[in-house]
Length: 127
Image (cartoon, rainbow, N blue to C red; front, side, top):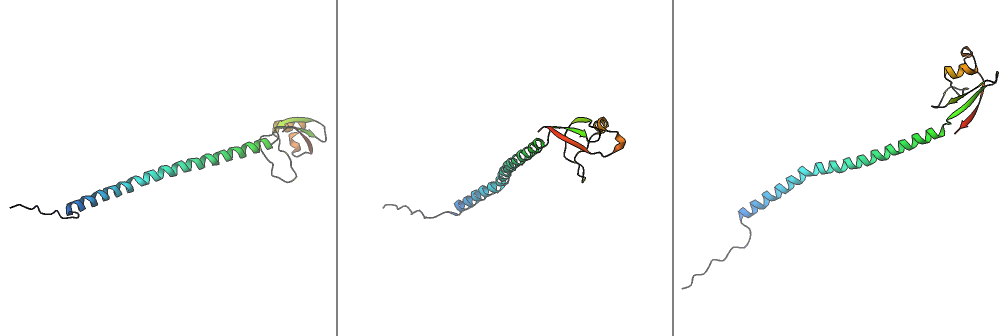
């Protein structure tokens, strides 16, 4: 008599199912664990690009403002005709009726410092 082999059951055993679930859990945990650092790295690169773009824009604006100011002017006292050449280093003054603020040394070359405010003509020498 011949012995017949029992037929193998088709499907998945409980152990195979548990192993599949555990492996799936490990893969998901690794994805969650590594996703945040990867996302932060990508965000950091994006922020660096934006920072560079903003810095370039600010440098360009600063360069344009510096170029818009005349480098030096000749200031002449209308009353005496005395003049002095000064270098412009900032904008201002922000007081109505005034066009220039001179240093004490430059002002003393065209008028007495006790005069305070005087009428002047100015000529831009280099732009």
